[in-house]
Length: 484
Length: 94
Image (cartoon, rainbow over all chains, first blue to last red; front, side):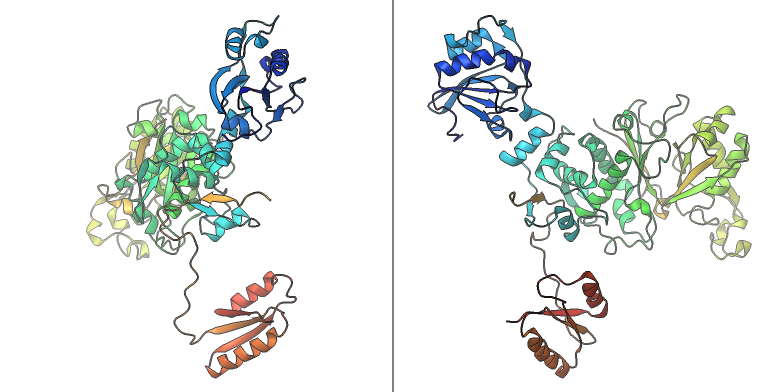
């Protein structure tokens, strides 16, 4: 490293006043300065240590970074401009071996560990790599004019969903990549509609833009992998004229660990993890896959959930079988379930007091999905709130019982549903007139029941699905375990 | 001033770094062209000549002018131009 202020032949000590060990060895540094030549790189105080002629204030931490300092004090011996030896912390024997008798430090303990270097503090290290090192990122650089607002540059390049995004700088991307142990160049999959390869690095860039914290990244990767399962038919969901977009439901310890909301306003705004994980998936489809509204996305109206639609299940009741477990994931594991969801339809029932009453009532609400006379317009998600769930629980009904009873309650005589019946043209073909027809597919796919919501309110939420779900062999909701 | 800010491309990088200009229309038939005088000296003479050429070619035009050549056009003026025209000539002179 061409640093003319460091001695070509001599000693360098990197220290900070905030480190008790560095303060402890201040007399040793003074003694070594008298023996010279010595330079002390001070990370946090240009006046520390006192009594040393060459103190190089490293407030930008560039020297600490270039010297690869992990802890302070670090004593380094240079010869012919090259580092030949170093020792970390205070250990008399080691210091004397490197620096001679002047490093004896009479009266000091023989040994005391040092402190972490400021240059490796969380977030700082990534910033220093971005500034002074090789970030190792493969995505191409986009220069922004000195006087241009990077956020506006993102808009101008068409990288946003209509809301501002966080500009993806190297520093932020490196921090985001710190959230996973997966390699940045690992290809997660091919993103529709253009089937463009998407690396972990591209996921991280879009996660930065969406506003994710690094600890969300494993969940984001799990969500993306689920979306790329061919059975989820992400391409079809993207280009449909229907309302639907990907709805993300998170189960297990990951949801708690990153502070996802499964309680008050769980389907609404206000929780960073809920908001940004769902948004990242949409940004990846837009930016990497090229799925643009008005181009391949042909939604007639769309729905606000196409910005982001993600929440966690309330797993606080040990009697409740979580959605992920119902769908084959081991208890205690984190998982993502993806559903082709349209908007939220609020369901009000403040009169039912028994499970039998409530299940019949819910069936009436669920029958409205798509159209009350259609039975192939997609499946549904039923979000049971605490007050509605309590009615079932008090009646001794668990998830399986609710599913079974709901499935029965969702049968209708075909004669009421065929074309023209009830003076409504829409409906089922005449061949169903003599049949009893199921509104949805068999459980648990037909209605994904999930618990969430605030304590007060005899409401539940119905989220209709996508007609593409009508052929189960071709299109399904997907549940996948999230890798740590 | 710090060094030029740099971002990383979040896309599949299938388009050039430098954004492409909008493709010119294949024909001016039925289009209205905004002629905006940016306020530099003799700019109006240049716009007058262009207007004459467009008129001979049967192309509709509308005239606009920036209040001052020292500042960007007001947002309302740019919105008006975008709403009333399909093409624009922003004319310099000197």
